[in-house]
Image (cartoon, rainbow, N blue to C red; front, top):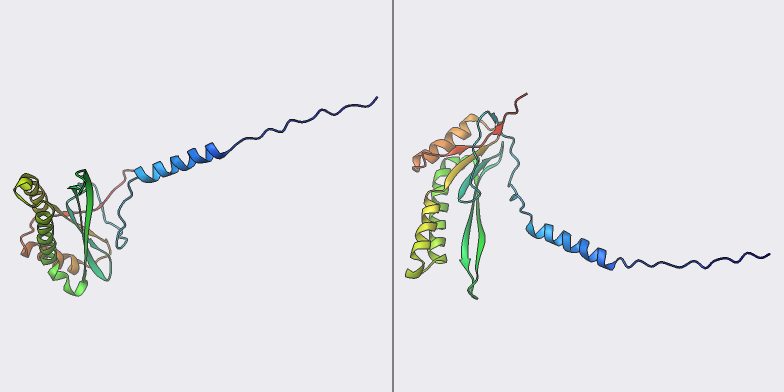
Length: 184
C-alpha cells in the first residue's frame, strides 16, 4: 500500500508591518530623546561632598582643561514666534576659546558674551508689543549663572588668574563644578 504524502501548506508571514512599527518606534525615540550637548574638551573633575543642581539654560560654563585653552560656553533657550505665527522654543549656543596665555581676559570675554546675548534679545523681541518678554529675557541673561568646570590637574595659577579676571569684571558670584564623592 502506497502512503500518500500530505501536501504541506506554506505559511507566509508578511513582515512589512512589523518593520514599519520598528522604524516608527526608532524614529519616535530619536526625536524625543534629549542628548547632552557635546563638550569641547573632556575634564576630570575634583571630588566634593556637596551637591546642587544647575539650571539647564542661561549658564555661562567656563571649562578649563589641563592644557591648551579655556572654553566659555553659553546656552540659552528662548521662545520664538515664527512667520506663520506658531511659537516654538529655540536653543542658542555661543562658544569662545581663550588660550591659557590670555586667561586674564576671561572675565571680559564673559561680559562681552553677555552683551552679545542682550543685543540678540533686543533683535529677537523688537517693538513695544514684546517689551515684557524682552525685559524678562534680558533679566535672564543678566542674572545668568557663571560656572567654572576645572580639571583637577589644572595648575593653581591658571585658576587663580581666571577667578581674579572674573572678579575684576564684577562677576563676584560663580559656582565651581565638582564630582560628588560616593559614600562607601
